[in-house]
Length: 330
Image (cartoon, rainbow, N blue to C red; front, side, top):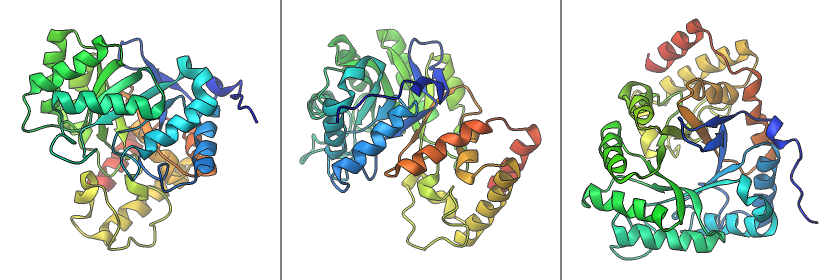
């Protein structure tokens, strides 16, 4: 059956302009980090991705190392794109990254010019694209001159292989440093994609949002549910082998019982607001307009649609925000 997108897709989900740029993105983007590469049947991945587009999610986020096997998430996206989404290319914001381990040998990671340029070419081939809308340097490279990384990213734009450039997992200070070089080069720097969620709110206190705003860029938040902690799944306990992302491991510094206590307090707030803990977590992230988009991933279409219901209650009172802050930092 030939896929035809839902005609009402742009009426379902808010979208945002990234700072004062010309790029507009949905408040939620679809991430292919987990469960959509070589470990998941293609038809299931296709079903979820097309459902996302039908629900107004027109931004798809990938990386060279997503899979779990390197490149397989991009291959999955590429198969769905070629089969179903190619007629909608002008509507889609497609992003990818490079910097973590991608292929054997010393040139298969980090942010040297050869590594980044080769990675982008491979990504374009796997996804069946002429260009990506955003290409991110996936992590800070402590061994390569920042000017080399910045100039390699700038060259991608000049070659027409990327429309905008971003960084990922850079600290506020690192973001400021490379943004200054982008300003000098005239590179269309669009944002930083970082780990940010209600249990990991450090972005708010780091000055990151102000730095990005100053450089006409936005923040793209990944890990919004802290690997599933901010759902109803762990209200009765968290297994000791819980696979916390390295950016969220500090959450357990006082033990899992303390985290469960926080989750139940947050769940009570969500109940009082008439929404799920997941929906409240997404709404909380998007209260600041400088957060351009929140990257969500799912291998289940029903779960994805349930997340979108955050739009039914997006506002917070000052008292609610203070209460969340108190719960998280207690």
